[in-house]
Length: 285
Image 1 (cartoon, rainbow, N blue to C red):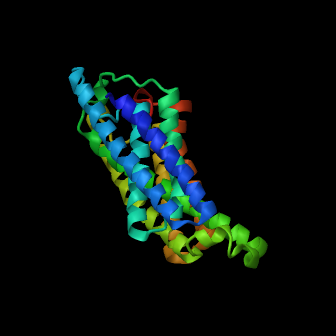
Image 2: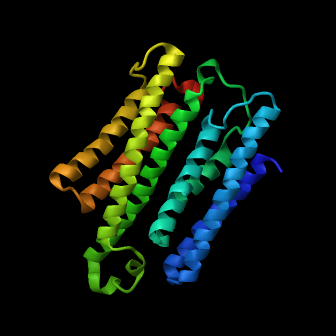
């Protein structure tokens, strides 16, 4: 079997997992929730094998590089990191309903990659022929994944506060009974960002080192670099506001959602709509 076939199976597994989580949300049956998690874990395992196979295929073709060098490969890797972070939170905290709000991000990424992109393996352009590629992409996308998880949790928080505000007593035994308490959601949002922020910082540092290796300068105010800095400042503001002004609850949740929107624009919007030194990568970082 080829890596493309495994990626297709992965996409199907994430779809089934998401639908099972939706059924879990409606039925409140714990066994269904466990099934959703197990299917997501199976998809993650298949996804890992697919990435390994694509890496091997590149060597078989004489190209020989990590599968993180173009838009297709980067989205596939981004989806993998999202499910990996979800699996960590799911195993540690057991709030399986979070999967209904996080798996859609991974599914959308995989579906877009499989249905709308060139999946061919191509040689690296000279600027990408560096070990910094691996260090930079891994740290950035683990940070992005943590922000995706934080966004999903923040959406849960905002839904819960909106419904409770409309009719707290009527909703307490319905949909909201499946959600973790607001304090827990707020804490999980903070913890996810505390994972993502240092990783994004490392991603910017390794990116600067890579830029110096490739272009002879650490920083050139390229659109990608500028937007990476904007994203960094958004999450730095989140942490600063929380530590110094006690920002929690809805304000923190909205800032988390805004931060992830900025992250997506940094990752996809800059590459698709703006030109710069990073355009060659087609979304490599």
